[in-house]
Structure formats: C-alpha cells, structure tokens
Image (spheres, helix red, strand yellow):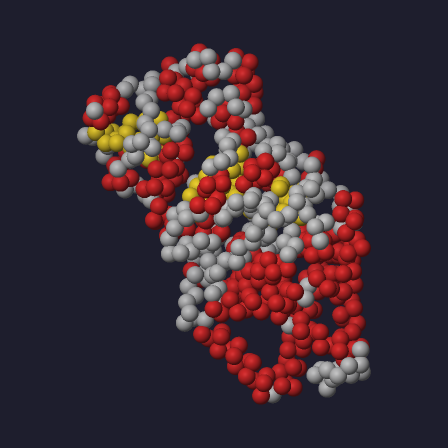
Amino acid sequence: MVELNLQHFAHAAPIPAQERKPLGVCLVDRGLITKAQLDEALFLQSWQQAPLGEILVAEGWVNRQDVINALSEQTGLQIADLDSSPPPPDLCRIKSVDFWLAHNVIPWRRLGPILLVATARPDLFPSVHSDLEDTGYTIIPVLAAADQIDGAIAHMFSTPLAEAAEARVDLDQSCRSWTPRSRVGPAAALAGLVALSAAFPMAGIAVLMAAAVVSLIMFLALRLAGLLNFIWHHWTRPSTEASASPPPALPCVSIMVPLYKEREIADALIRRLQRLTYPKALLDIILVLEETDEVTRSTLAQVNLPSWIRTIEVPALNGLTTKPRAMNYALDFCRGDILGVWDAEDAPQPDQIERVVRHFAQADEDVVCLQGVLDYYNPRTNWRSRCFTIEYNSWFRVILQGIARLGLVVPLGGTTFFFRRDKLLELGGWDAHNVTEDADLGVRLSRAGYRTEMVDTATFEEANFRAWPWVRQRSRWLKGFMVTYLVHMRSPLRLLRDLGPIRFLGVQAFFLGTVGQFLLAPVLWLFWLTTFGLPSPLDPFLSGVGLIALFGLFLFAEAINTLVGVIAVSARERRFLLPWVPTMPLYFPLGVLAAYKALWELLLDPFFWDKTQHGQASEEGLPH
C-alpha cells in the first residue's frame, strides 16, 4: 500500500506555473471564502509581507488544512502527512539541519532516483530544487504544513539542535567553560582577602571603605550621565518617532515567550497577546516549553491557541534548563525578520510591534536591537511593589534612555527587546549558561560594533512584592552580573579595544557599581555610625575634611537618586508614587542579602536558575 502511494506521489504531474489558477480563486471555487473576503485579503496583502493563505487563516476565514488542499489543487502537488508518516533518518542526512531549517523543507520519501521533498511554500521551492541538484536525485516537491515540517526537523535532529543551543556563543565570550576546578582560583583569592582582613583589620576596613566609595562614585557617575542626557534630550529635542512612517510593506515579526512551570499565567498570557494590533498574518508568536515541563504543557492543552501562536518543545539534555538555552533552541525555528522576547507575565502595549517596526525602519544599519520600557501593573499591591515600580521607572524611563543616546553599552532588560534576527544569529544568540543572558548579550553586541536604542513603548510585568521571592530574583540578577563581568574581563585589553575607552568605562561603572553597591553596603552603613557620633571601626580614618567630603558625597548621591525617582514617576498615571520616592533608601538593604546569596552561588553553583514565580498579583493596574 505504501509503495502504491509513493508511485502515485512520484507520477503526479505538477501544473505549470503559467497555467495555475490563483490560490484565492481555488478557495472561492471551493466555497471556502467569498469574493468579498478574497478582495479584502488581497488588499491586506498589498502592504503586508505575508502569503495570501496566512492572511486568510489569520482572519479566521479558513484553516491551514483548507489552504494546503487549495495549494494542492492549484499546483497539482500531492499532500504528505508527516505526522502519520515521518521521514526516514537516512534521507535527512543528505543535507545539514541548517539547510532544512533555512528553507522549511524536509526530504520525505525516496522512490528509486526520485526524492520527494515536503514544503509548505511551493512558490519558494525553485531555490530549494537548485540547492538539491548536487544530491543526484530527481527532486519532486510535495505539500505539508509548516508546523509539520518543523516538527519533523525537531524530531529528527533533536540531539544536535539541543547541543547547539548550549554552545552557540563563542567559548571565549561564554561562561560554559567554567568548571569546579576553574572556580578554585577566585574562591582562594576571596578566602585570602578575608584572611588578610582578619589579620590586619584596620587595613582591611580601609580597603573595603575605599572600594565602597569608588563603586558608589562609578555608579553615580553613570546615573548622572544618563540623567543629564535624558534632561537635555527631553527638553531640547522633540520626539519624531510617533510621526515616523511605517515601511511600505510590513515584515513578519517573531516573538519568543519562554515558559516554565507556568500554571497560573497561561490564560492571562493568551488574553494579553490577543490585544496586539499588529496584523496577525505577520505575527509568529512562539511559546517555548521544556520537554519535561508537564505543568505548562497540561495548562496550555486547555487553551485554544490562535493560528498565529505555536509551541516549541526544547529537548532535555545534560540537565540544563535555562531560559537562554530554550531561546537558542527556538531561534532556529523563528520565521520573522525581527525577533523579540517577552516573559510569561508580560503585558505589552497593544501597538508595541508597530512602534518597533517603525523605529527599525528609521534606524541606522548598526542599530540591531531596540529595548522597550519595562513597568509594573501591580504597584499598589504593597510598599515593596511601589518601590520596585519606582526603581524600574527610574532605570528604564530615565537613566537607560540617556545611556543609550550616549552610545554606551546598554544592558538589556531580559524582555521587550527586539533584534534584527540575522544579526542575532550572527552574534550566536544567547549564552545558555548565563543567568542574566540579557545583560551579557548587550555587551556582546556592543563588542561587535552594533548599537542598542530605546523604543517608545512599554511592557507591564508583575512586580515581585514578597520579600524572599524578591531576594531570590535579585540574587539571580546579581549573580548574572558577576558572571557577565568576569567573562568579558578575561581579557581586559581586548575588551578595551572592542568597546573603546568610554564604553569600557561604562561597563566598569555598571557592573562594578551595581554589584559593589550591594556587597559593600554594610561598610557604608558604618559611616553613618560615625556621622551620628556613635563608635565605629571607621573612626580612625574619618575625621575633619574626610568626614565632610563623604557626607557631602552620600547626600549628593541620595539627592540624584531622589531626583531621578521624581522625574520617573511624574507622569499622571504614576504620580501616586511620588510620596514613596523618599522611602527608597529603606528598599535596597534587602539587596545586600541577595548579593551575598549571589556570591555564594557564584562559587558553588553559577548556572543555577532561581526561577521567579508569576501569577501572584492582581492585574487591576494594567493600562487599557
């Protein structure tokens, strides 16, 4: 029976292109769409870079099987069911997995000298046929759904694709080479520093105090530079982005949403994604799941996914289940020219993708990444959520805006950043072992000579408002900053050459300043004992001019932080947070615990991903 079917496939005569009926006419003749629907779909296609079938499916007028059947009628090609009759492994090895992924095709059957190759886009098959001429087979296309082809490729090449996902980034810019033995040196150096301080406590305190002050000055200088540039740009240069014209034909945009054990968030996530106003035929939303994640899989099984949302399962391998590894695996299956990332709890503004597409169309070629603003939809939950919202607004709405315009390295925010996909592939995707893969990617793209700009759009997340989950999340971020800094400072002179002096100093200020402010905060707390006339280990070092200078520095730093916070929440919808800005100094001390947790994990378990639990807060503050 199989042989008879193959003979039927092999002897089916394709209809010459010049004699084919238009696909829309085939669907009208079958009674699946009306002439009015076809006319509207053709109008939409005039400004969308999407196949007619995708537009009809996205509008809900037909399903994908209807389109496949009409394509078969139009082209004379036969339909292959890859789910019930998967391709054999030996045929798939005639070309690399990269070839099958790039063309979204897969060899399905061989009959003597004839090779049947499954495709969802017969209009693009001539280039595939040309590239397969060197195989020695007579190439004949057959039709299959794109998702079936992706599934066949994923099944056939699961192990090499999973292995590649763990090692996409060059070894010299990745932390995956770290082993327990390689961490002995830093651990010994830290132990030696502690022992030296214990033997010579006064010298140790002096060194720690100097390091604390230097890290404070570095981070303050970075914030001040960002603030001044923000103020200058805000009051002297009117924004032109809102009036910029979109490109003549809109591109396809892929969005990856990594999910892991997300029982509470699935329904809300789909509801938020459905609010997007970008043409659904040009949306390629990919929910990235771990193969072993039964929780999320069973939750999504109860949700009716729209045609423009699909799932990809990441094979289990070597026990590594990090977000960047999952995204590296899914990266090969994305179809858009632009690729973005959202988290499970994200609620993007409905017109976010239009803004991104418009910004990319106007940006210089060296701008390969756009970072959006991150904000929170539950600031009223408690005091901690209010402070977290002030912190995020200060960073994303003020400081990062100025840093980006200055051309400094932009540590990406983990979500709501969008890449030119070809450039992301060129950079090697994400470091699968780095727990702040976003900040690391921001450094790597700068080292490669590219730039990140801020895009005028916001995504709303769930503020982590409980104490211990906040510590766990913050410790993961701080550990990732430590890892990223140590990786890129393996060769400081090379980093200096790649970035140039100004951006190199910006990297030092951000990573050393951020980590140092938390790790060395207890030393600064001792200063306030001296200030208020209480006994302190710093008394021998602080007196007279030195005491006044440090007191002035700390007050100036707090004044700048307060000013940034006030500016950040001065908009009407965030103005209720203004009374809470002065309480921010009470918010950060918990970060000291997170910093030492991060340092401990850096030495013992640097790749451990301390996952944040979502779906704990009300969405009543979500803008509409």
